[in-house]
Image (tube, rainbow, N blue to C red; front, side, top):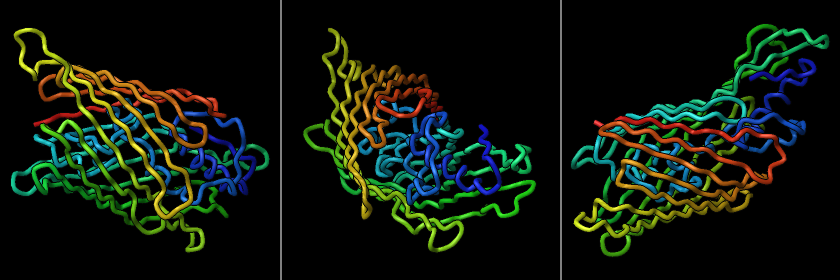
Amino acid sequence: MRRNPSDGVTDGRTVGRVLRLAFAFLSVSPTVPLSAQELPLNAGALFLVFPVGAQAVGMGQTATAAAGRGEAAFWNPAGLATLSDDEFALHSASLVAGRSSVLGAYFPSRGIGVIGGAVYLVDYGDLDRTDFNGNTIARIAPRNFEFLASYATNLTGSVVFGINYKLVEFRVDCSGDCRDFPAGTGATHALDVGGQFRVGPGGPLRIGVALRNIGFRLQVNNQAQADPLPTRLAIGALYEVRLRPATGRALDQAFDVKLAADVDSPWGQVGQSETRLGVDIGYQRIVRVRAGYAFVQDGLSGPSVGLGVESGSLGIDLARAFLTGSDLQVESPTFFSFRVTF
């Protein structure tokens, strides 16, 4: 994806526009130019609020109380504690200015808990820097990276706990005539902490609480321009209902419905709360159909749908989100997840 600023002086604004639009987490063509002054304070770390994982996106990004999958690390690390098998997973999505990719692996160990990690890349594409005559004089490549290390364990019979350590990096590389261009690299450290507990006989209701992106500011150029991380407190619930099985069938051979709701708010920062709702219906893990709605900021609220299939040790999930009330002309993004258990 390319953007052509009018001259070398406006390159900072061009990168700013890429990052500002990234908050929309959709593939777009900007209809209104945005200046550097309109860039959010935490622009360099906005990718930390992008949704990861097709299961979560299909359910309207409701994942604070989700469990049993590696993608839980990006929503509430406590959800990793219920993993029963080693898992290797790949997640990808087309976002506003490029593509996001996640490669993760998690390993449960009896008596220790679940350990693992992931590498997360958001590639905003190459941008052409032009002179006053429209000639390309340089190429700019902004990227975000996250290196994640996770640990989760069962504290009691119904309570689990998880924590992530994250190395967060924003990099802007420039090749060609890069004079007066603010290229650079910024890195910082952060933590996610979370817990989950079950309520009721058999634990049909799961409650989750997570505090994400607790850490130092991300500094690229100087201390005065350091970006605070988008720290957020999330609370979610998931309720599972098993439908009546067919005559002669066991209860675990019946269809089930999962209803989920999440609310999250900025922690120590100015901002509004966001609400998400989702539903997941299916037969065991073989086939799952999902839908949800995210009530988020910047006019980017909208529904989503998803599908999951699993056979043996292989699983594939797809999801698509649709915007309503946005001022941007967007293409609805597709999220893809592939996982192998062993």
